[in-house]
Every structure is written in C-alpha cells, then in structure tokens.
Length: 257
Image (cartoon, rainbow, N blue to C red; front, side, top):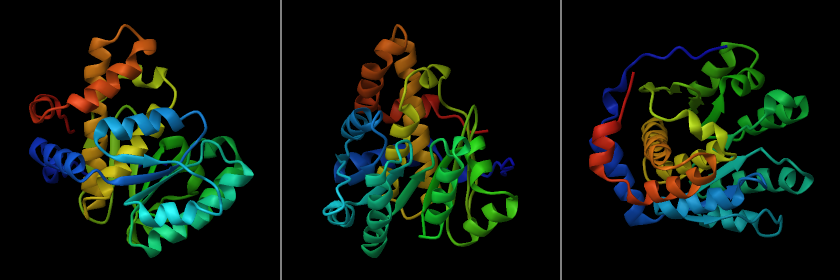
C-alpha cells in the first residue's frame, strides 16, 4: 500500500519552517521519549541540539507523570520489552489527558506480528502523528481503508523514504530533502521522530508540524553529510548542523515535490 498524496505543499515554506524552528528554540518544549535502547542517547542529544528538552524514563510508577508534564510524547517501538509494553499505554493516556500530542514510530512492526498487533491497539488511543516507512505502514493496515479511517479521526501520517509523504485531513506534503548517508547510522529515523514531537508541541496543524520538522532534520542531515568523512563523523556533524541551522540554510535547501 502506498500513500498517493497531492503536491499541495503551498502550506509549507522556508519561512514557516524557520519560524517553527525559532519557536522551538525559544520555547524549549519538553519531549518525553519512550524509545529503543539503541536510540536513547542520540535522540536526547538531537532534542538538545534542536533546542528542546528530553526526558526518557519508562518506569511505570513515574512515566505517566513525566508524560503529563511534558509538552509532547514520542513512542518508539524499536525496543518493545515488558517494561515498555506496560509504560506506553500509561504514558499515552496521561499525555492525551493533559492535551499533549503523541507521535508513534512503529519501528520494525513489519518484522514482528506481535509488535504489529500492539501498534494497532495503540492506534485506538488517539495518536496525533504516525511516522513510518512503507513496510511499517503496510504492516499496520491491511487496506487503504484503515489509513483513511485513522485520518478521518485526526491522525497525520508521515511516511518516510527517498521521498517523505505526509497525509492528513487538510494539506498533504511531498518532501525530498535528506541524504542517503543518514541510513548508515543507527537511530537517525528515531531521532527524527523526536523532532516531529517537538514541533508538534508548538503547532496545532500537526501536518505542518510534521512537514517542517522532517524538513529541518533532513536539511541538517544534508549539511552534516557534506561536512563529515562518513558514518563515524556524521552524528557530531548532524548535532552541530541542527544547533547552527539558520533561516538562510532552510531557504537555500528546502525542497518539496
């Protein structure tokens, strides 16, 4: 199943993306991340470089409090152990009760039927943004009807790949920034999900938040790839690029299909 979205990208401009980035830097939203073990340090550092504030606890006796007091919640299924299985629904309920957005990254649900079933159960909890690749989307829904139903209930889909596609009840986006070296370092996609959560904390239009967040992250990735010598030096260059990213960088590089 492939999302075929209209190129109605007029709602995204370099000015809007830069303005949202500036809002993140000034407001320093708190993003609580329930993410996989491999991704935790890089995700935290990505949020800090962006200007946001991460927290990471998965302890059942405190995760609801952290999620409720944060400004957005990221749920990443890359490590789905028993502790996370229990913590995730509690965190989602707390975040939604507090009026905060929830981003789901259903990592590798195409590799595990049990994980896919768990992700489908989470879909009934009012998630705001689902960030997935095509294989994960296909594992999440048997037919296009499932996607349409989720969109009708307010979900935004950010489908990542060589071209990123975002579909919602309102505007749709096709984005083509990024660099192939990003897939040579673990957890870059996981960190991008945290960026979406930070942007969604400050923007009511979740499709615009997703489009701007992905664009900012991928533009920083392009800059980092040009500066680094390979995967080993990509990560520090990416963090520096996020920290230093300017409106002029976004203006020069933003590409939409």
